[in-house]
Amino acid sequence: AGNRTFTMIKPDAVGENNIGAITKMIEEGGFRIVSMKMTKLSEERAGQFYAVHKERPFYKDLVAYMSGGNIVAMILEKDNAVEDFRKLIGATNPADAEEGTIRKIFATSIEANAVHGSDSDENAQIEGGFFFADIEKF
Ligand code: CMP
Image (cartoon, rainbow, N blue to C red; front, side):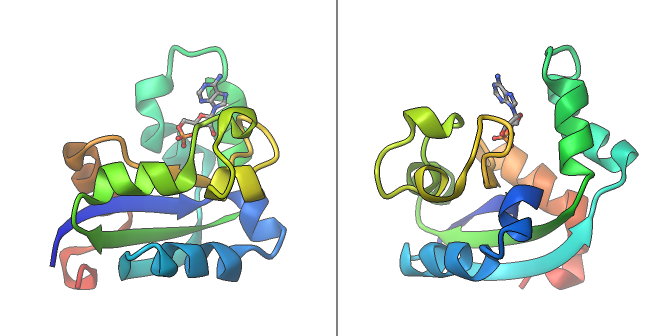
């Protein structure tokens, strides 16, 4: 049991063959993988997913990057899932991320930062629903 968060392994980490290593850290961090899917975002879908950042200077690059390769979408379950997952992945900018965090180990830049993690329970719900149908949420 517990509550849920949403993550994506981003195109940089998929391209570097780090799906297995990242998934292993997620499981060893105490998260149960509830749903999991490899897919590719169109520019339109990437823009929708990050619509909250539409006015930010990095938005256009972010959409191009996120639609430029495959991603792995997952719903994860653990007590205190949203907060604990953000601790496991580390700061958005890998230069600021703590040692041992997923972004410190696998990210290459503030944009190509290996993984996404929801920032609230409400967004976890919305983001999970962006990729998974109700019958795929176990
Ligand atoms: P994520 O946690 O998925 O949320 C927004 C994404 O925008 C972020 O990770 C990065 O991939 C990307 N990004 C690029 N530049 C910035 C920036 N200056 N600040 C925050 N996010 C950025």
